[in-house]
Amino acid sequence: MVPSDARIFVAGHRGLVGSAILRRLSSAGYENILTATRDQLDLRDQAAVNYWFKANRPDYVYLAAGTVGGIMANSTRPAEFLYDNMMIHGTVVHASHQFDVQKLLYLGSSCIYPRHATQPIDEDQLLSGPLEPTNESYALAKIAGIKLCQSYRTQYGSNFISAMPTNLYGPGDNFNLESSHVVPALMRKFHDAKIAREPKVEVWGTGSPMREFLYVDDLADACVFLMDNYSEAQHINVGTGVDLAIAELAETLAEIIYPRAEIVFDRSKPDGMPRKVLDVTKLRELGWSPKHELRDGLQTTYDWFLSQDLADLRTASVA
Image (cartoon, rainbow, N blue to C red):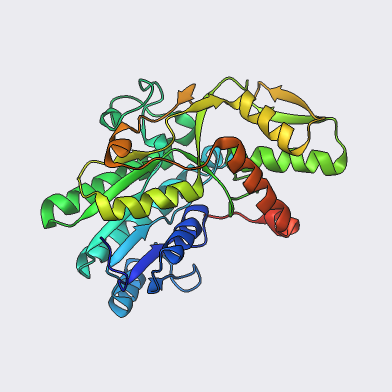
């Protein structure tokens, strides 16, 4: 168990996942939570990261920082996604080793698995086939992060673990249509159509791909659980184990936001992987399962969206 007075560094605390981890740690009574903004610390700079670790001496690290985005962002900025994420993972993991961090939890992504992986996808399918081309650079960086943690464990005995969450959504998400994932992108589209009284909402692709979605506060709860209860070298999947078609997701969001909208599928746009749902047997056997149903989570997220400054949400790109 992580002691209540432990010094805990949440890397990426302003992002979707990092902010949820902050909420979870605060609710659990942890008071020595360390954070650093991009202006205060460039996580791609090893010298700067070493200096910060030496000055702040964290005992535990949640590595949730990174450059993230949906199909459009991944397709148009592959070099940025590969460089930024590999550098961030490298500097934080290395500094954690150098300055004797007791335990680090590295957060990857379910995109690490092959495009045609057997469904549901268990942890052993890593590197068993070609990746999905639309997010290959991001996936390669995340795979490198897993292997980096395992390598420091092998060479130095570091207690560095990795968790691979499925598709996430929730309060604090990125609603910029040029870089957002499917849930916030569709939520933004339906909301904008409602405000403008547009009769149609466009959805990328055919609507047939199957996807699994996890409310971000459930992921944060799983992260705290794993920090207390998991210390194996192999990465572990985090998800619901339940998927649905993108078309069904769009219909659910329409019901919540703008029931009058006609959903139109732009088949000229890519679908991504045909199906992606995680096998979460390993995590469930440890004793953890999610608490939020999809529709309830989507409603809560939209309520949060409505409470924000919509001008900021339209332009923000949270990584």
